[in-house]
Amino acid sequence: MAVTIQQIAEQAGVSRGTVDRALNHRGRIKAEVAENIFRIANELGYVQKERKKRDVRQIKIGIVTQLAGSSFMLEINRGIRQAKAELQDRGVEVFVEEGNSVDEKEQLEAIDALVQKGIKGLAIMPVDSEKIREKLNRLADEAGILIVTFNSDIVGTRRCCFVGMDNQKSGRTAAGLMAMLMGGVGKVLVVTGFFTNNVDNRRVDGFLDEIKKSYPGIEPVGVQGSYDDADEVEKAIVNTMQSVPDLSGILVVSGGQAGIARAYEKLKVQKRPYTIIYDLTPRNKAALEAGIADFLIDQDGYVQGYEPPCILADMLMKRQPAEREYRYTDINIKTKYNI
Image 1: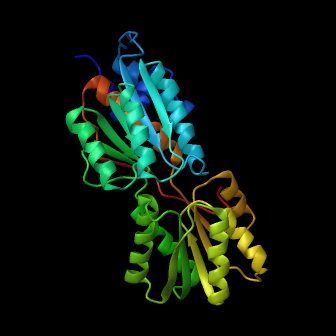
Image 2 (image 1 turned 90 degrees about the horizontal axis):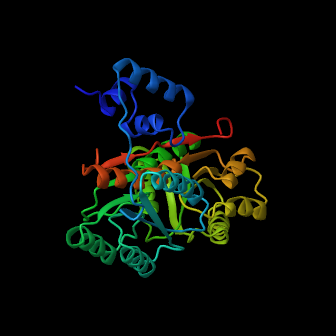
Image 3 (image 1 turned 60 degrees about the vertical axis):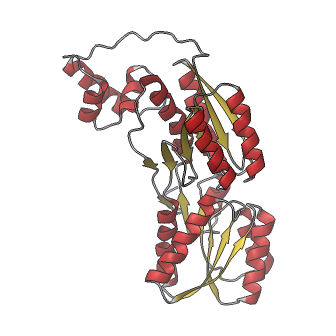
């Protein structure tokens, strides 16, 4: 019986995709991992099948993103670019529509533009709205388009799987970190981005639920929207600290985090509130190094950009369902000591 990639993956303790990329010299794989895969393949007597060249027009996949100008998209876009380059060699054409906001109309137009190109799979960061939900279900039911959500999810759709961080769990993680910093006592401000953003909402819900459940000595003084804008983040912090002079903690779950430092500088604070932020962007890394924030929670954006189109390609080419419904990325906690 012929040796399969799955058998090699099981012995190597990696995914089938990692084995496939190693054997075909594609993608970013650690040298020691690749060497181990080749060793196991040789020991098992694996014989690689000759790949047939495919018509690049055979399979088309579309990708729809949100908030193209946000810093957290840097890593997601890096993953998308890598997947696009690799999939081109497999005869898969990838089209990307970048959304600038969390806007229902903008996203519907982006989806329509991709459908007109003849896509068979769609990876999307969905806006959480009824029209988007209905649109995705029509594509799945009537056009047979396979759908994978990433970064943000949407309930009530026939999407195949979700790739991204468990944002509610990350919010609970932030609550535990904040309680540790504050000693379980004090007042805390939460700054979100768009109230229509499912990612932000789940982070906030997880944080507040865990505070209420486990840390009764901590008092949330409000949740303020910032539209991912640094000026709005600055304004929210300045106004709150002026009205709540004993504020002990600040959690910013969205973009615009440059406004934190500006607020502290404007108020000339002697001792800033404990501060937790999200996403390991260059600017946020600098904020950790400068002591502007205590903890940073990172969502592994590269994986979120890379895996959805690869999952769709495998499903379309192999005609197999997704291996699992939820592909949660790691909740990585960073400080200035481990970045």
